[in-house]
Length: 163
Image (tube, rainbow, N blue to C red; front, side, top):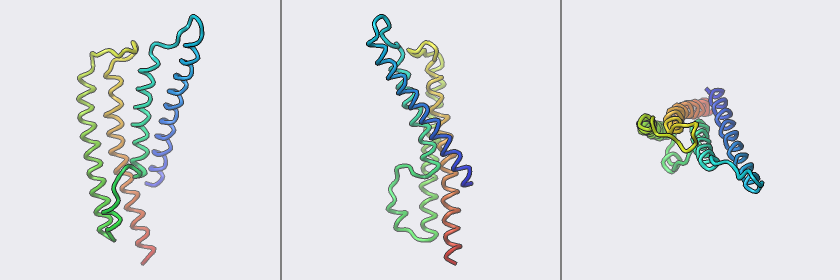
């Protein structure tokens, strides 16, 4: 399970980094083209940059979730000992999974309603843009479950070392 966690982390981080690099490249090239006489830059640079930024952050969320390094309050987990610590980790993971499932459902509805809406970038319909949201939400929910499994197996390993 740890190997799967590592692979998901590396792949998601790589994809997010590539998307950020593409976004930055588009912005830099557009700045250069704006000052080039007769060219004026891309008409679609702003929207593509926004999509790439949001998509890369959603994909990075998968990596963060699988490593269980998402934003959380550790007070209850730090105060708990033994089985209580496991219970707190499980409860936090369940709420995270429920959040991502709710997000997947609501963004699925959004994507299906936006089928006919055309983006300002002529090659895209808004549904194509929005489909990244439910996909990354489901993958993040799965990542939380994998991260929990790794954390619990680590906790079991530490308990066996103490015994």
